[in-house]
Image (tube, rainbow, N blue to C red; front, side):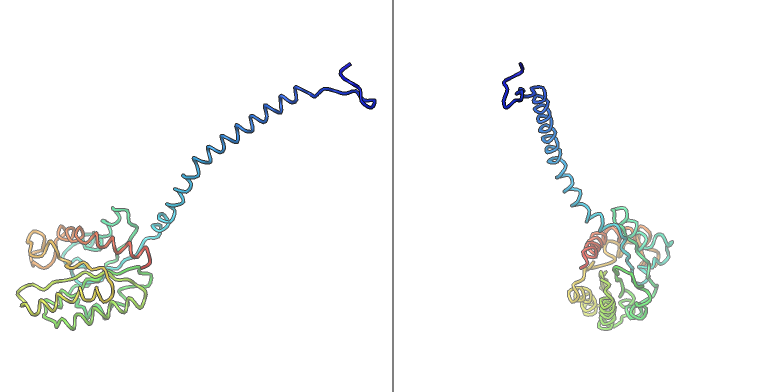
Length: 249
């Protein structure tokens, strides 16, 4: 007999083979659970790290559209179009990984008042930011600094009303115009920058003014290499400006 009888039934011993299978299956399940747990521990930080990079990648997906609003220094007087400041600046920014376009809105001979007269059509809708460089012709013509400041102020205010941030590129008067005029003129740009909270590059011609090797024969306009020097000097300020635009400030 296989076992004792109880109430007319034959008592059977437990199926020991089945019990062994259950135990093996249980061990396999536990081992599988352990492996999955370890893998999840390793994968989760990677997923978190990848997610943290998404906003930065997304923020760089859309190119920023800048307009370089200025005079002959911006237009690229005497130079091929590709050698003008806007194009060299755009190339330098792209080489550093920035998605950006820089439109050339420079007009030779323009004063600050002339820039004000055309700002609405020179800076189209969809512009993310403006690099404003005007005042050199005012200074060369001896225009009252108060007139220059008033025009620049109006340009900045008009762009601000359209929701377009401005970066200001300053100019300085040469000594031959006298200390009084120089003091009044040079104060325009820091004062406007403080008034509107703008990023200011104090002197657009820094590093090339008076250098015959970096200027054309007229001594006023930069050569291609002169423009490259300007771009190299202003680049950190423009990158700060781009960072501000990305943040929506």
